[in-house]
Amino acid sequence: MPTVEVITAPAAMSAWSEAARARVERIAFVPTMGALHAGHLSLLSAGRERGDRVVLSIFVNPTQFGPNEDLARYPRDLDGDLAKAASVGTDVAFVPAASDMYPPGSQTSIEVGEVAQGLCGGRRPGHFTGVATVVCKLFGIVRPHVALFGEKDFQQLAVIRRMALDLNLPVEIVGRPTLREQDGLAMSSRNAYLSPDQRGRALAIFEGLSAARARFLAGERGVSALVEATLARMKDQVDRIDYVEIRDADSLRPIERVGGPAVMLIAAYVGATRLIDNMRLG
Ligand code: AMP
Image 1 (cartoon, rainbow, N blue to C red):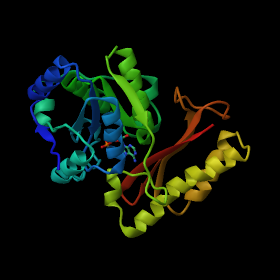
Image 2: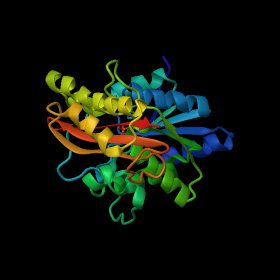
Image 3: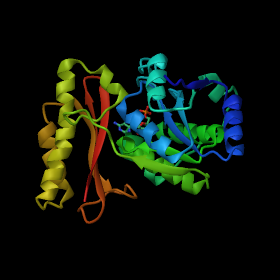
Image 4: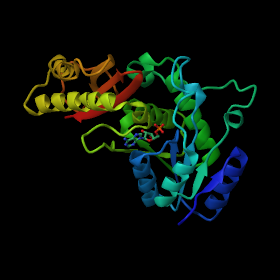
């Protein structure tokens, strides 16, 4: 059984990457918050195909959680994560302590503009500043040639693409499709919070997306009618809806009719668990 080298100190991680770069090895990088599932593993496998070395980071980044969010109870399973990561050929797990990522005196953060506003950016103030800052820091430490992210977090991927472009970061950003459970529920570390009843009701998010897509494929192009189809399917199943929106898939700007590439995005609570998912239309 191959093993994964665990590195905790940022300086040691950078030294490892410098040595790999000196050997002209291409470094693929997958940042995560751990509690790995098949969706994360699909990113690591895609990294294996794109790089000579694959680096995984596991860091539950405190700055991207709001004061009333689930930072303290976020699932953690380092041993399980390392075994799963080893099974898909990961070379290194970078597992820094929060005190090493944010030494006392830190006072720099990265704010991405329009694409980080609305949707999760509107509902979780400061979230994408936390994400952009930690991903930029991780890029600086790991120095990857290519970094892989899931389309499951569609707005996050757009924010990171924008940041990499705007800051001339020398990293290729690759987006990968969402992995789903057999019935369609998007895989998420947060699914572990769901009771059996909640797990059943959570499927309404995927079914809501599918309802909109079916209406779209039948010819409907009006955003409000498509959103209505989704809301009708989710009614009585989820406990609170943060948003159901259809946006331009590239700019994430709001649209009224689906003319080109578009995406429906949903955030909803089942019990106390906030779930997100999305599906492309057009
Ligand atoms: P997280 O650990 O939730 O921060 O996610 C780490 C990375 O895995 C992000 O790029 C996510 O978009 C990606 N990811 C999470 N869930 C899935 C999924 N179901 N399918 C594919 N990628 C995913």
